[in-house]
Length: 212
Image 1 (cartoon, rainbow, N blue to C red):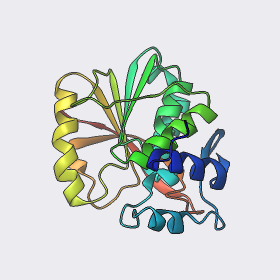
Image 2: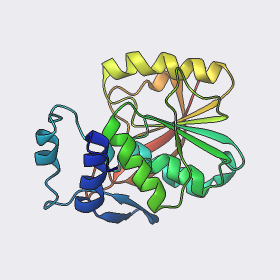
Image 3: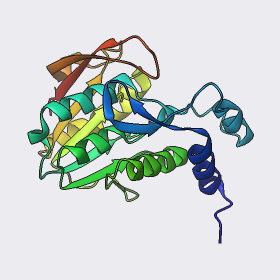
Image 4: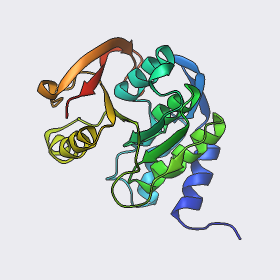
């Protein structure tokens, strides 16, 4: 029986209107991304989601830089259990899967993002499991792209990720040096110039390790 709820409508819209697009900075990965003809914002409005930003529809700078870093340093996740925290499109989880992670979990509270992630993972032959339990799954490595984009989000997510690091996981953060980035809790590992949220011009972005 066809799914006529939001998940079914989201699956149909993303699959039909958001073409798979190879990423210019990582062409081996393709994501369902909007074009000017996609009608994304009109569809969101029709679903009553006009106030829910479609973070899942774009490759953000923090996710892009983490994907590049894992491409260049696959040993960081090879054979490890990995959590893509605030997964959005699933780009970082897909990159971890490509790098040889033994298990990839993903967390995102947006139900449309969950559908986009599922479709993107399937298109890239990546096995990613959505975590729907309380807390987080036990993971060796936690990848957090574009988490610290404003002060309110930092106040909520930094204690969660810091506690995860205290329990022994390696927490890697990707971010294009946004104003709210808690630099005093981070050590810079690498920098790349990557597009941010669908922009054409590359921006300076960093990969950081979070201190417990």
